[in-house]
Length: 360
Image 1 (cartoon, rainbow, N blue to C red):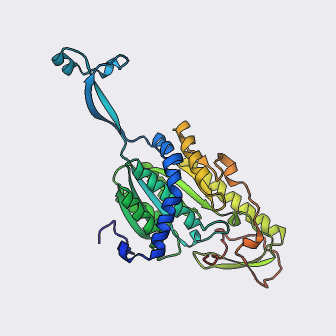
Image 2: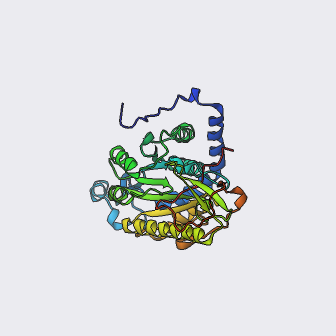
Image 3: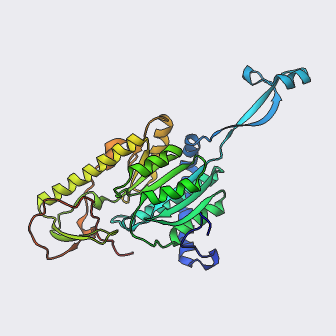
């Protein structure tokens, strides 16, 4: 088996269920306007390619740079000629998408993995529109599926189709596993959009290794219900990756305060880590979507080419990316149980996420 072949191969297009093909078409139609108008220009101004390549020699015109004169051709022709260069734009864009258990969660318009799929579709179609190569890698604690970088609209649609049709084989997460494969798959410097909720504990070493060779942009997927613990009384929480369950009394102020402290601490640690490594971060919410955050990222990075850039779900920078959003308790997926009313003073070191909601 080749290194770039998925352990879970996707059937040929003729065997793909009709509903998957309809979803691919729906995503393409939904994102076409964004790709053609909002994102294309911003993308091109941000990712400028790796250098310049020779285009032609033409006769000198007033206003041309004297330094661009080709003296050999000018001497032969008896009048001045200049060399013209064009930007070598071809880039490799790699989309690394977390498909672990915690990504299949959401209490707003969509699940986190659905948000990641649509965001990946926009980036893929934007890249091929600019004649760049785009690839995709889906991961949990293993590489679930890999699609090598290529050009063309047909390839971008294949990428979206694979994102919709590949079923993950593991619910757990390992950033180290995806970094190992990316380092083998991408021998030259590439732009990597790493889409995950980053609830994994082992981040620094693999991300530092990846950032040494590639331009890494972290896309943090969040749902409001993971950030604010609603007051709904006794409830059972389940970690979708490990299956671990805990019972807590959400009506007790100490429990909600402990949860808030844990979320704030995790945010601060992640921000500091990305800052140390020089990684840009785009925070996207299932409630607000990705459009404002992605546009703000493109524009902020053009203005600030050196140093990490961070944008939030409403396109704003910095701490506003993590403003607390009131949680509608009727949409929370926590299941009420007759748990003990004894207060719980602390939560596990790894944040528990609510049980996965039923597919709609």
